[in-house]
Length: 216
Image: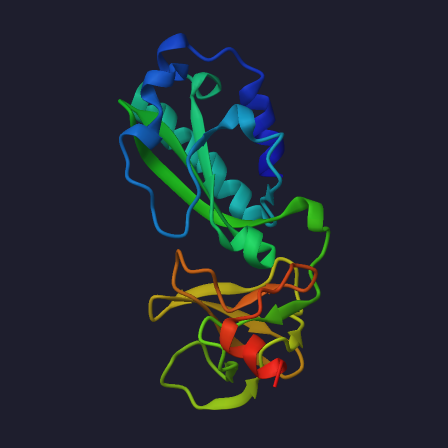
């Protein structure tokens, strides 16, 4: 898996110039909606994520390494890698990790692939907690113009069917494929939002409107 590649890289002495805190990309790049801060590859082992679930992704990472080495002009083993995780990983267990090499304080030759929250083992249950409190429509296809086939009320539970879950970006929204209670697609929300789905074991905050209704 990609984590093994990163651990090998982290074990090699990185030149002081490339590893210097002065070249922290978080100081030169504004925060991206839906993404956490950049972290050096030496933090990969202690960060709760896993990535690299196919030979295609592993080959893409090797190509990424080669491109970084060529852009900087140093051996692959001496590159300073950085990575950042999408907020989706904490929200639904499946998201993305972006790798990048550092050139003059800026991230270049980046690679984005699927990542999961390693400590969760396997996510088979997500819970509806919509941002507007009106429930979550299920669509046959991941597009807003598709006809909704079912409305899942808030606090409904669903199964994504796979882990990692299938997540794509369409209409500037993150869409999640689900297998039950009906097969289709639901909108998680735009990058940076708190999302319409959460893990089934995550605490649910009841909105004031809903709380008032429960006390009547």
